[in-house]
Image (cartoon, rainbow, N blue to C red; front, side, top):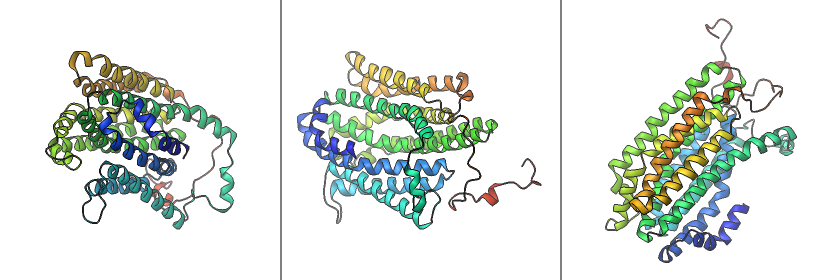
Length: 378
């Protein structure tokens, strides 16, 4: 909430620091202010889905993430262009669709949890669980802060590249802005797969089933290649049709955006593999190596390539910086996955087990999930 309020108040300062072209400033201001309003709902939805995945329920978060994405996709052109009964909001309509999608999804998932009396809902005596546990709080701080810094590194790199993009004028800035919006959709399968992989890997680490970890990671990589690859292929085939939903067909920005996608969008397949590998090693508490890898690949390689190579190849350096960063991050992540010491780490040391978890009613029931003594390999 504090981030949303500060962003709303200082939006002009932020845009000024990014070197936003004067003719694009009103549009950028209206877009960012609504996005800042959406931040609390986005974070709350992410938190609830993470808790559910950690409890072994990956289906419910998937359904409600899909709800948010579908609402965002459907409302985007309707609110931008004012189709039918919807108001014509221009670029602010894109941010509004995100706000609506996230808000509806988080309200819906909370209603479902309380209606179904989910064991993880906070009610009655469970409200006492809001009192921090010192041992868990230390884990959150020492493990959670580096994970949070990873997002700051990615955001800092994005802001740096955006600042360079703005120096090429409003058409290039508009094209990059739309391309970046489409990339958020391309990355969603990898993020969802990474969250599921992290939860499954953590559960098997806790159970001492290290023989499953490699299979979980391999499955995650495979699903990422298929799903993210399919989205990239669709964007490549129908690029102009998709871009025309956001930009007028006679706009010069469409040609620029199509070129940006052709150069950079495939690199998110590689970055998706990196996300899965990071999710696997983080399940044991290895949070610093992924942070270091991101600093090197995103801050040093990507932004360095975009900044220093622009004198050689011009604005092309901006678009090719994404493949450069993704290739670097994948190579480093794969090297750490194969050779690093993450398998010797533990998220929480010497903490007694809490016993058998309750049946949530949302995943596979325990009765069917457990093997009987007569079951082979049980």
